[in-house]
Image 1 (cartoon, rainbow, N blue to C red):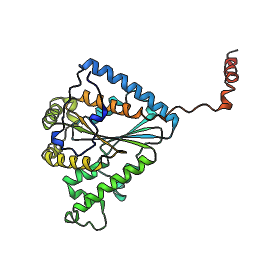
Image 2: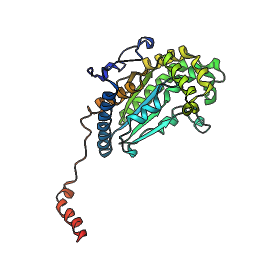
Image 3: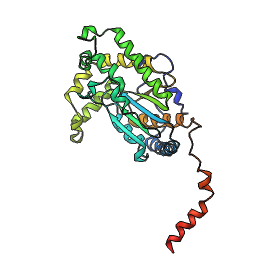
Length: 294
């Protein structure tokens, strides 16, 4: 296996998305990748147990990518060894009528993980500067003062929205949420092959929607807005990582290892010590339980 360094995938300066790789060779065959993945996710699950007992931090994992990028299967594989109480997954679809009664960040704010838990956002608050850029008419559903038509949505509107997102992330980070944002970078050809597999396999047919093809026609525009969003919102407290996603196993391995390698640097996260008053009576409690068998 080649030396792994999570910093190789972190966005620390302006990127051009078309120059970022969609495939990387880690120098491992399928079996070794599976073994290393299993080892790391077990350690990640153990770390979450400690974080739960510590009770001061939460972790937010944000996943963005085009259709078929592998977000669902990545969540399933990365968190497979977690205690079920330790991770909550939210898949954000089009806003409901109730959600549209609030500002666009409200539904994401109330879905944030509790202290001690992981939260995984399958699609995220970034849909509000991605899908809405391609389809600005969706903004009209938000019923925002001063926005009566698409013509009212200018560049300042989007710049303000980027600033609001940065402020949102800075606020939750300063209050104990550790943020990871992963862009699953898929090539257009690989998406075509995955859509074809959805059509060719009866068990996958339910995943296909004609709307996938319609959105695919906007590929270049989406890539442009992904690039802009990443460049304008990758910060020290809420970094973006660009994950080559043409190979699903590799993408899962990278995300799992980035999470673990980054989180283990939090040296203040440790299991709380047992209160001294309880500790000095452990033998008594032990004997009390043993007597129950007599």
